[in-house]
Picture: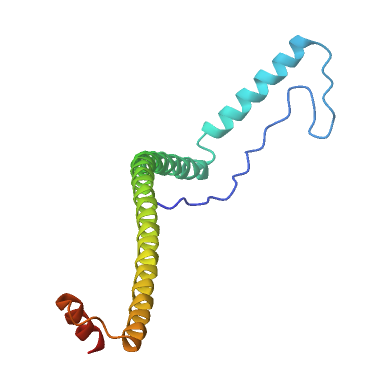
Length: 166
């Protein structure tokens, strides 16, 4: 509910205390006189606002009461919103804790995978080095075999020779 701004209401005029005029300064000499003037001023202000001579004041009072009721309703709604925000905050804190825990688990898994990937790279490098060595030995054997054929008496060597030269 939207708050309505009401214009500032001027206070009704307060008659001057007894024994003084509007323009004359009030000289208070003792505490008893001060209390008397104060109580008379309050009485005059209250009677002026309650009197039926100012029917416009009743409309202002009703407007003020309406504004107070609206403000109280708004305060109630704001309290509900605040409670909802607090509940959301609790839920979000819980979700954050779960997310942080999940992140830590995933981070550990990623570290494991990175370690495994590094191990696989090392194994691949070793395999490639071994294959390069095998290829090198094979070329050397081929070149040596072309220069001097194997002895005819060894059947296994002859079969390997044919496979290599084929």
